[in-house]
Length: 185
Image 1 (tube, rainbow, N blue to C red):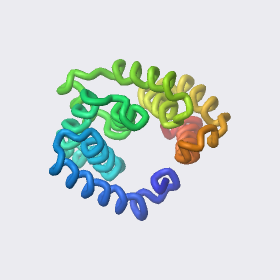
Image 2 (cartoon, rainbow, N blue to C red):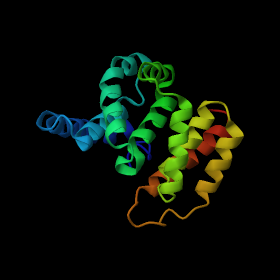
Image 3 (tube, rainbow, N blue to C red):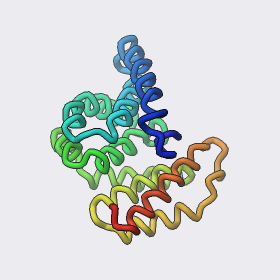
């Protein structure tokens, strides 16, 4: 929520740090726990999301190992979270993530296929089309990204009471839409 409202550093970072601490405890207790590994890497990824590429590179293996573990063990965990995490990492860490993907023998096409399948299976989780649009914009396919975002922005965020964060995802989609239109992406 705080990241989507522009309060990432002031309000979101403390929650990401706390989430990492809890997940680290969980990983020590159960190293093969998908939830512990997933929440560790997602909190770490979000906490360094807007830092330098050098800092992101420094944490590459800290992110890659639990992400690959989660992908192997249960790639559908938390609305296809591992696939979404990779998509977000591609757009926020660029070549650092692409290097990690090469190490792991994962391609962008694999992630995009996973996102398409996720959207078919979970059409009411708005972060999935947002991530697809974000990757399209990152890869220079602005028209395709705008088309996805326009459809997403026209949808009802309250389509599922189980996904209240859809409001945040639409807020992020609106920001991305405006960034693309104004040439910032």
